[in-house]
Image (cartoon, rainbow, N blue to C red):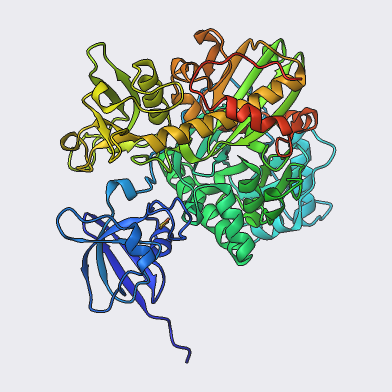
Length: 630
Ligand code: FES
């Protein structure tokens, strides 16, 4: 008899959930598999120090001693306790741990705002209930024929197709051959994708916007065009790194991880979808259509396509057309033969999410010069100029996700999202609300919009120069000096007022990270404008979670986008999610997305000689006008 590998239980001191790990498995990966997210900026490679956990109790020999590399990343414990890096801890016995707030990858509530846009309900999948002839009706016909004929007459169609897998599923339902009343789900009025005995009036679909960091699921009533439930969750692939390059690198090193990452994501989407169905009192079998969008790497992994070509020149997707795929092949927990639609991709970095965001723009977007900007770890920019569409993408770095920032965190409860300096010099802030289980409302750290806001506020109050340098320590009581006597951090919240018990600061290196991210994005925008001969924009639309929470004044202050009146910088929320929903509810939008993919010309920035000059120019935190390029 084969011996089962030993498993160990890891308990959480302040959480009833348990982590089960195989003997020798690293704690980080075991935790994520059990649905407990621990931050892992470097993808579990022991380089970033973001996955710190506190060991509260351990069985003898449950953990080996930390290596020198691990010890170098571990902070001193304030009460003499033990910290370890979850990604380097191989578990060999029972443990009890705590995950400090700053190490928690918040699972349930990353913010993905959505806009309710009026979409005419013209779904791809419709339901129709009809009576079929009894078996002894003359002339004698097989069940398939009787169903196809009754369905065609109910739909007013010449013929409908009833594929074998659908019939096979139906033939396993008790009483299938005696049922007189049948409900069929029909795709594009032509093909039956589900048969159920009796009358079923609910006709639902799901739209999923898959981000590198998190995803959002919209459960919708297809007949009414309404959202029934919405859920967001962290993308569990984050255990393999916070950006797409880390995930591609992991797959490059071990192709088997492609399947692991795919399964992690699909399982988590299913978990969230089942919750949404329970909330809306919808059976998974009543969900008969799905639309999924994401950046090209997310879409590749979802489809089981190796994303390696996306990470090297000429940065082309393995497949660019949209994909219709059966839900059971994708592993989605909806009606098994229902068809899911995965959006087209345009290039290595311009994917279905960008196209879905474009779907939300009406005809006026194509008049004049309009810019759509979606900033995450990557910045995608689309310029619509006199009806022409061009796009580019630039590596803005993780600063906009609040990562690689001294006190950075995701946009989750406890994250400071806005900072301002009063006339008397007092530093004020606003955090995303919601106290923890103990009722503690104190902030934990800075999310991406908080970092930008803090930098802009600092520049406005002259605590930060336009060159990004912090002002001398004597300028403000909350500027801290380093050993050379220069300021190296601005304290935004003092330790007693922070949930972590440590100062929440904006460090000099955080400002440098903002400058690099800002310069990359702005240089990309400048090249895109120059290629189209645009010197003045009519409007800038900010898409995505981050874009939605930015204050237009803040981004204009530091020159993240070209100067224009503040009211012409507009947040459009989670446009990718809104576009995915539009394509779910209105079948014409899928064709529109395919047409947009063909219209969009992509400008590749790597290899552009002028990028570096523009990048250097735009490291300054100032509202520079559009450059005229030679
Ligand atoms: S050090 Fe553990 S995830 Fe980076």
